[in-house]
Image 1 (cartoon, rainbow, N blue to C red):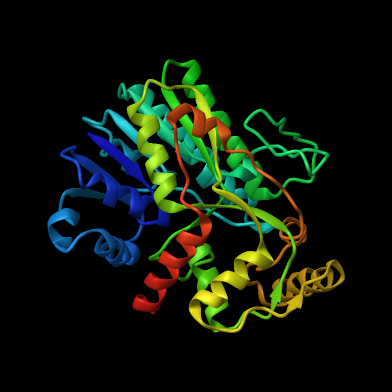
Image 2 (cartoon, helix red, strand yellow):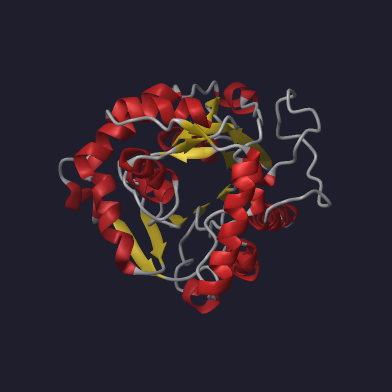
Length: 337
């Protein structure tokens, strides 16, 4: 039986739709029930008979930070896709990020070892990979992580999560790690992920940056995960980036596809500096979570290149062109919103 954590997120929902097409028994955990309807929406992209395939999933309410709730989930599990994570760049949420991402992953690893799980696939992030001093040199899986660098709290938590998975490999738990870039996919249009980015562009995003980021289709992420789990490959990590695009190029094409006006103003370093400081004061006076931090501002301006040749060679893997992904996701967005 397969266990999927984070089944009500973007990757988790599309992964479950993929797995539901097989005869394998599937168990998935959810923390709260609000997003279960969105999972059904995602299933609607794949199936005409949504209830039939959705009901193939054995749902359990559990939290990766709550070991007793997880104990009831692991009997009979042989393979684990650990997708659940908290995504935030707000320094005030560092302890929560540690709790969910690092301690939660440690719980999944420990229970996998205790229950004799054969293999685990962990969804990390390119944020957990190091940086090159020369931005023209593409980042690979071997790029050194510098703990002394100006890393975001999210990056630190994902790197710590990876360390827990590597620890599991030292205790005879076979594992693979995937490090996706910005994951583009349909179904989740609110909440801060890439879906909300399509929504913001549709509503009239005013600013763009010339920063270069790595993008990948959620379908490619899921396909790579499943192929790696079904292969003899173990104790390896793989960058998943289809193409390195500037945000200016991404936002212009998305706006054109949605038939709305593209962002016309560049968000300069000076402007972003003002913006993240204003956001800090907004949090100070209102207590609301940060929407733009100093490191986020730095990240969206950086021109970082990622090399996905390792996964391409290991699995003879081909990525979906970003242009095709944008066309499909925009079509779903128009039909859903």
